[in-house]
Length: 385
Image 1 (cartoon, rainbow, N blue to C red):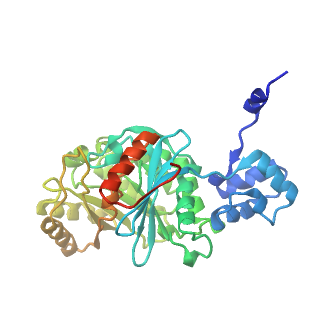
Image 2: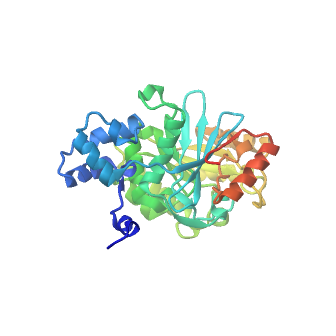
Image 3: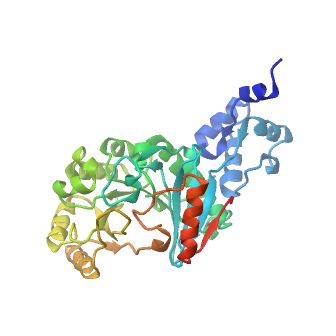
């Protein structure tokens, strides 16, 4: 006779509905012998009301709720800690199914609340100015782990409900990892972000940032029309090869051509690409480099976002000076470009652009980091201690 433990081990694993797109959710219900419209009901309960308990879904029959509890679950990743910056930025440390951690950052401003979402644990690209790449690559995140970051953030601010009242108005796939190297899961997650039965975000309010995985970028325009940002950081291949090693495989010309093809596929002819350019002291911040960038980008309808480098241990780089930053910006503006400067936010909690590392993987390391932050008088909440 089998023991209870043996029986438990043979039970089928419940499917996590948190990460199912509308089409996959409809297929799930068809597999249960239910109508496809049930998918929209579940999407609204999960993503518009923040409900993860089937018994509370009162527009479903009791028998269906019981069946769902047997075969499915709604499970977000575990929040390990929440860090609040003096400037209003919030960073979550989130543990994934394998025990490794990722980081998600919320950045408030006067007219929006932007959530920076991770797509991988670590990153393969090893850009020289990014802390994430220095920790190596573990794996791709599942769709549930990606959309779960948005679910956690919205729940954290208790802002499920009418869209105009939500704290998170914009999402950028600019956290840990290269989104186009986790293509299918990222696309499913972005579709949920834009689905009217889920978060209902506009295609202009969901942005994917890529360092230039050209074949995947060429495929992206066939399946979505989200906003696109490309991480350029240099105006010639020699320098970009050093800063962004994937450039050796897909050089600047091929990346810009692919970005232009993406624009050509969009139904809206007025859209522009955002070009991200991290300014590093005495590396890529000189006036002649600004002029070179201005000439390079003439072939691409774009706006330019300048990002002062945010230092991290072992990088060997320094933050650009204000004089060099302003000079660089002025040259681009004079050339006719719309130029913004990304304000450094969350630097006191290592949440600024390029600083995400997700380096808490056990209780001891979390506690050591917690004690260091207490010494620095930084506001931190530790979950599950």
